[in-house]
Image (cartoon, rainbow, N blue to C red; front, side, top):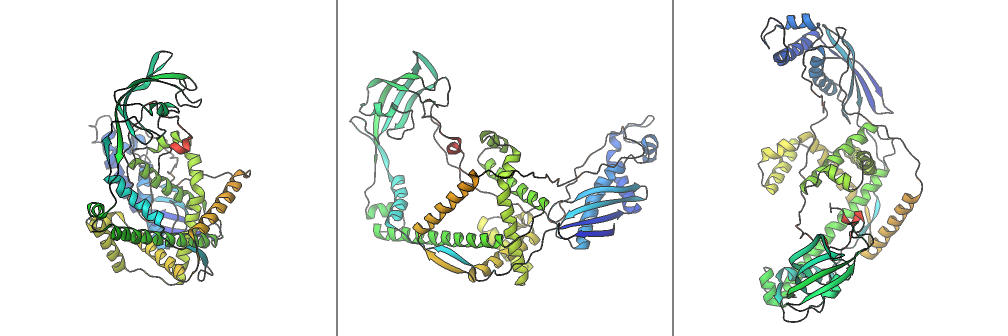
Length: 523
């Protein structure tokens, strides 16, 4: 492999390499392709797979194996050239064959390199920081979770009231005919939860165990089942049992049952301390996020489109992984949200651009501060991750690439420098909420304004060679390989984890579905 020429366009952050692959390397690739494909080629007079290479080339042309050989060689040649030229590439190169013969081939690789920027004034930034306080209400809300888990249901001998759970059988009919999904047995309905259509639960209130009753309702006009929307219906209801929730007594015994503490006061003090730690951590993260917004704004360059598209690819991949952990495919999600792949990518674009600008800013600070990460420091971090996840360190090393991890560590240290040198204006949570409300209103106003239509040019991350051979197309079956040429670094994969919550399935009598945005699976 030999790089014949290099053309650099600094304004567009691109480099054009003309790479020559010599006869020896090309010949070796052709021979490998022949051995791999000969079993699929039938030549009269030879058993399948036994025809010599010269015979196959004589029948189908000397260039019969050229294209597959090129596909095999050029990713390696590009990778070697990138290392030789010390390029920090931003996306997979585009490749175009220029010349090809038995002496080898020459091709052009168009490479988008990662921009290098300089950042001024990253020390002394000023941002708001929320004062981390803990209210009695917050402590009570935290305590309510323990109360809820310690409570239990108890049958009562009285008419049902709001807040009770009524165990019922029900059978719904429209015009005297039962409808699909309108029947249930021994269903626990929490009265006042509004989980059934309007008017149903109100008429169960006052019923006693063993009582039967006909309940008349009208389905909402926008009910999800069109044949029921706006239509009257009658439900035959039988109430089996009325249950009420019994809450524990809040005393020292309760504290002993649900915690490691002997008194309720000490348990509350511990909850208060944990909430304070959590609030302080959240406040610090919000402070850092605001500083990152400022840093991103300092990167005033037109980002290479290929770099943005690559970042969108990563976001799409991460999003898809999170959905799959919830049992939802990307196709299902887009269909449900009435989105296309293009509209979803456009939605992710602003976030992708902001992430890139933030990364470039932090990398510039790391260079300015001469931050260097050693192999020993990376190994120590891998060890910590291994211990925290209870996984062999070899598993961590197989997923997290060292060079990539060094860059992440350098960015983290750069952010620490920015944070430690920033001025924090302490504000209350109420003030922070007002600021967020103003930002949300401004964002909404911006959305309402007609936007200038922009055309997004789609960047192909990989390009298959399409050289035409003088001998014409071969009738022999070829093994085609998609060249992926991820030459900069193996993509670092992070295992996404989400909490899954089981939810009781409601019958078709459930209250009307609201806006799709409210039905959306929580991410």
